[in-house]
Length: 85
Image (cartoon, rainbow, N blue to C red; front, side):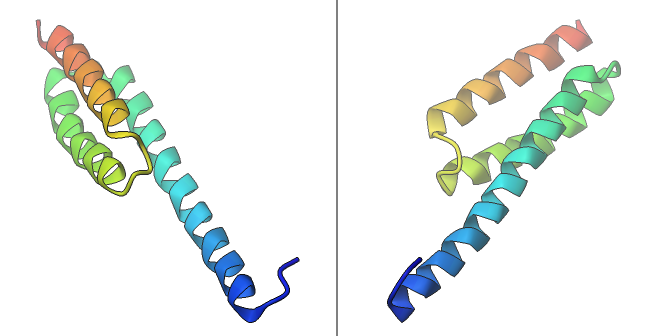
């Protein structure tokens, strides 16, 4: 347990941030799974743009490494392209 008041505050802040980060990562994974299961290219294209913004925000906030976000975006783009082909 933290002894000082500032350490207690940092513990509270860290737990709130950890919860928010976990929720954000979970939402990204859920959206990715939903996109990969889509059959319609039009639906997938709309979901892809939403997912792009989620991944970019996560990379900007360093929840994901920027290269990880870029790799996932490329994989999803390839998948949507295969749907429309």
